[in-house]
Image (tube, rainbow, N blue to C red; front, side):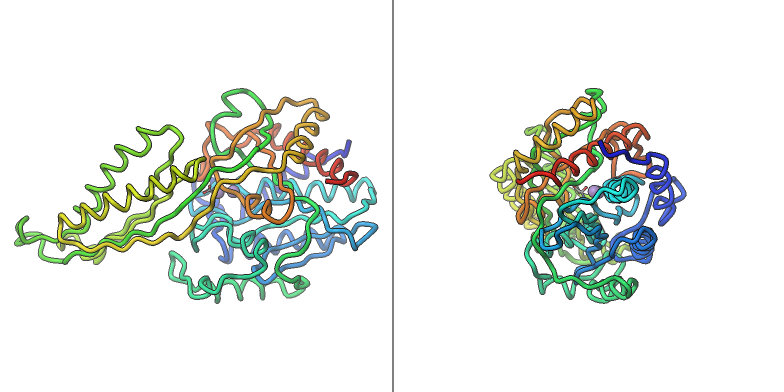
Length: 413
Ligand code: HGY
Ligand code: MN
Ligand code: MN
C-alpha cells in the first residue's frame, strides 16, 4: 500500500481554497482568470519544489510529470480541474487535482520507481460557466485541436477567450509546451459526488460507471421596448412575458413527469434592464441532463416548441442555439474493477453509481480508459459556497486513488 500524507493533503486543500476565497467561505476561481492563473502557478511551484517536470499544452492544460523508468511508455494520468463556479465550493475540482498531486508526492516520498510516468493533470475550464462550453481543456486534448469557433468567444464578464488563454499560457513561462493530446495509458479522477446518495447510504466510495448526458441552450427572445406606464397589453411585445410563460410550463412538465430529467435555467437577463421600460431582449441559458440521449432530444424539442409558441403569442422573435452537447458515456469496466478492488484493499465499502455531473473524464474516456472515484459531500451540496467534505472522506478518496494508481502501474489494460 502506498502511504499518503493526510495532513499535507488537507493543508494543500486549505492553501488552494484561499485563492479566490469568497466571504461565505467558498471559492470564485473561474477559468482563465487571475485566480485560476494563481492556482496553476501554486501547483507548478509545488511541483518544481519536488523535482517534478511541469508542462502545459496550447489549451493551458497543466501537467505535473513524475518520470517513469521507460519514458517511451504512455503515462498514467491522474487529476481533475482547478477552476471553479462563481459561487463555488472548496472541493469541486481541487480535491481531485490535489489528491493526485498527493499521490505523486507519496510515490516520491516512498522512492518508488515506476515503469511508466505518472502525471497529474489540471484541465482548463471544466466548469464552462465563464466561457461555455464546459470541459474545454479535456475536449481539445481528446480531439487534438482547439475548435476555431472558440477563439472569438466572450466570457460572461466580457473578456475574450483568446486573450485570456494567451495570458494564462504566458503566466507560466517555465512550463514546457506539449502538443495538444498525447497517448495516455489510463486516466483516474477523484471527485465529490455533488449529490446526496453516498452520504445517505453511508458509503465512502462511489465507483462511477458512467456520466449522464448534458445539453446547454442559449435562448434569445426579442420583442419591443416601450413605456411601462403608457403601453397597454394589446400594444405590448414583451419577451419576458413570453419567456416566463414558456419556462413556467417547462418547469411544470420536464422534471415532474420524469424523475431522471434535470432542467435548469441558471442565467436570465433582460435588456435594457430599466425598471420602467418593457424589455426589448431577454436571454437565458438552459441546462438539460438525462441518462438517455433520446430523452434529451425530446426535452430540447419541447423547450423549443413552448418557447417558440409563447414568443409568437407575444409577437416576439426567438433564437435558440446549442452551446454544449455532451452525450452520456460509460467508463471502462476494467478500471471500474480496479477502483472497486482498490477500495476493498483500503478496507472501505464502495458502490457503483452514475454521475449526474459531467466531468473531464468523459472526454479523456474517448482516447484512453478512464475511471472516476466519488467521495460524499455534505447534504450532497455542490456549486454552492457551503460545499463540504469530511477530512476522513478526503483521505479515503486519496488512499483509494493511490491504491488504484499503484495497481494500474503494474498492470496491462
Ligand atoms: O456542471 C457540471 O456537471 C460540472 O459539475 N461542471
Ligand atoms: Mn468538477
Ligand atoms: Mn463543478
